[in-house]
Structures are given as C-alpha cells and as structure tokens.
Length: 307
Image 1 (cartoon, helix red, strand yellow):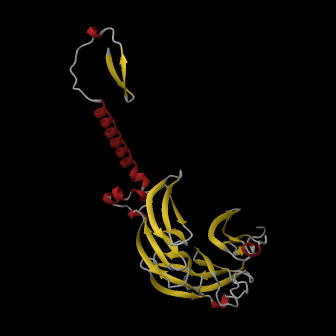
Image 2: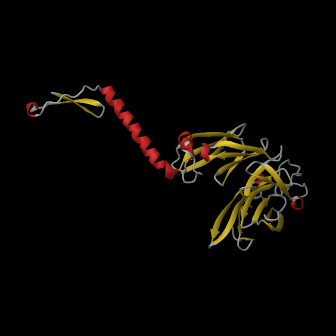
Image 3: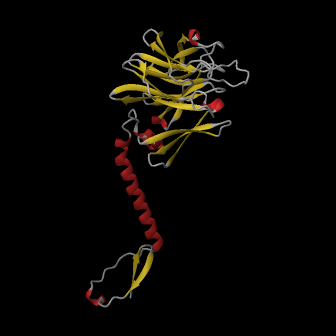
C-alpha cells in the first residue's frame, strides 16, 4: 500500500508491482508544509500576474513611480468613482470595478456633494455648509491634495474647466459665477449674473458646461419669495452662452421647460452635438407632469424641439 496526496487529502492506493520501480529516497514533507508551499506559490504567481498587468492598467495616470504603484494600486484604470451619503453629516468617495466589486479606497467628502473629472484629477464639489472644492489625485490613491473654499454659504453646485489654470464654479446662493485657478484655488474673478436673476435677485445657477470657447450656464430662476417657503419655478429658466475669452454673456436662451436640474451631458442627434439636461419643472412641487428633457444644439445654438 502507498499513500498518495491528492486535492488536500490523503488517498490510499494499492501498488502491485513495487519491486519493478526504482527506489528513490525523497525527503519527508508533511501535509501542512505542502499546503503552505502551494499557498506561497499561488501568491507568487498572483503577484507576477499583477505586475505584468500594471503597465496597461495605469495608462490614464500620469506615470506614477514604482513606489506609488505598489502603495496605491487603486489608482489604475477600469474603476468607477462613486459618491455616497448618509443624508446627514457625512459622505464618502469610493471606487468599484466595472463588475461591481468595491475597492479599499474611501475618501471622506461632504454629505451633499457631486464629482467631476478633469485633467487626471477628481474634483469634489462640496455643497452648502462645507462650501468648497476638494481635489483628489488618482495617482496617490485618491488622496485629497487640495481643498479650497468658495465662500461660506455660497453653496457651489458645479465646476467646469476652460483650461488647467482656469475653472468656473456655479454658486447657487449668489448672483455670480466664480472664476478660480483649480491648481491652487486662487480667485481670478467673477461673472455678474444679476441682470438675469428673477425678482428675488438670485438666479440659482445649477449646471455649467464648456465647449468650443463657450461656457453654458443653466439658471433655474426659482421664486424664493413664494409664501409656501418652497422655491417653485414661477419664472422661465435661462441658458446663458458666455465667451470664455472675455467672460461676456453672448446670448440668453430660454429653456423649453423650467427648472433645469442635474448635470449637462453631451450627446449626438443626427450627427450634431447637443448638450442635454433634465427639466422637471413643477414635478417636485405639485406633482405636475409638465417637465421634460432639454437638448441644446451646439452647432445651431438653439434648443431642439420635440423632447
């Protein structure tokens, strides 16, 4: 009888012709040692595969050094950034794979925040009561590398970039757009929106988008003087077209439906570029089904009908 080790267990088999086999002296290896050896080999091969894949997985990162790559492997591609909140005092930025598996990266952000990506970095817009821009670097494991205030109570809602040194920030509680250097948070100027506000003086700038030398700003123009205490869309909402070379307003376009909400997205209709945004109108106030989706043609600079 001989003992053969198979699949983590010992199997006893009969051997009828032992004398015909040459006798070899092998060192004695216990089952526990064999298991440890297998695990060590598995870890070695897994590490080898990971090192082989790292160069192709990090193509969207600005060439991190080898130490950074080992310390912060979450900085590679094929990840999705997610901002979540407890709807109370805190939020967090985390990563999941395309398959839905979470990674260990967790960065504290505001409980009311949105994220934007530009020039290899993540920009977290921390809204009312934190009122700042938080910059995360994927090459450093999404650590916060910069955080700058936009003014207490100003309630930033969006950020759009004209260049690596020039960005526009929508301030929901103010009648101007803030211009900053996103590299260091320095204020560069502002764009006055007071001529486009409604009677309460605040235009409620919700979203921004930069394209072809133009900055597009969505103004909700809600009624802050309404006796209900809510902010109903009693006024037409505007899309401002601004020249980023001069920061002058070039045109005012009236949204086909009121109360633009959320983020601009660029899509193509019949081969022409459009920016789209949801416009719920009074859906959140009296549950009226009077909203829709607005699509602005960037080529003709006009809203598309039929949406």
